[in-house]
Amino acid sequence: ELSLKGRDMIELDEYSTEEIQFLLDSAIEIKRKQKNGEVYQPLKGKTIGLIFEKSSTRTRISFETGMFQLGGHALFLSKNDIQLGRGEPISDMAQVMSRYLDGLMIRTFGHDNVVNLAKYASIPVINGLSDMAHPCQVLADLQTVLEHKGKLKGLKMAFIGDGNNMAHSLLIGGAKMGMHVALASPKGYEADAGIVKLSEDIAAQTGGSITITQDPIEAAKDANVIYTDVWASMGFEEEQAQREVAFADYQVNEELVKAAKPDYLFLHCLPAHRGEEVSEGVIDGVNSVIFDQAENRLHAQKALMVALMA
Ligand code: CP
Ligand code: NVA
Image (tube, rainbow, N blue to C red; front, top):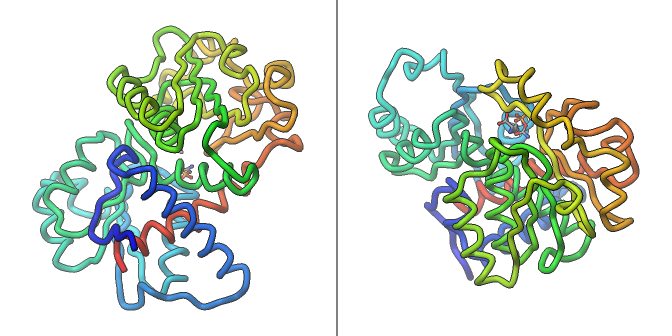
């Protein structure tokens, strides 16, 4: 039996295809248990600290609720309410928190904050979103596609929009699972070149592929999954107006999805700006699975916490 005990979750590239599949299978089983009303508390007596430097609806609620359901306790630690906001070094904080807690989650701007926290903490550290990556979201996304399509390998997943944290984690997670990931971004908003290279190397091992283009129709062509995210992520709000111009041709709307497979799934990590990156018709349409996706944050993160912390 595969064990992930004590590991960190900084980005999905550190996990093998088999380990990601294990987490997805476990998430589906944990979801089944919860729907059946079965009590499942392998984290009784354990505590996770949730450090937030940015806003959150889904991540906070799903981690807090998930930990409670697993028999443990979660602490919400907002940056300005802990000494981090006054400049306590991450290295000290990591070592102190490791004396109290059994696990940590951090949502932060700089990805190096996640890396440093994991470096100095002796307990598992989970990336709850950085400017580079959002692996917990992608676990839930992969679970959602698997539930709706029965498989991941060989499916085409198109991401239309900013080459941001979501694009990065989808490139890596999709490649790990043997998917064909196509990313269409406007000039100047491309994904990180190092992440693209990494995902290409992964895809070469798994039978997947990576396509990087500026053409949304090329990306969406025959796609099984169409994914988008806001044009201006947290921390980039002041660029909203200039981004609306740059991304004007990148809206996922009724016209664009004609290029996809008729039974395509629409995914969005949320929060969404309806009428910007996605039309109301698409996000509220019959192909949209955004609420299954949001729900699966709970199940996927429960699986992750059990795997790392039980
Ligand atoms: N998708 C996501 O991470 O949502 P929140 O920012 O609300 O946590
Ligand atoms: N790319 C978005 C995702 C939010 C869940 C952001 O970083 O704000």
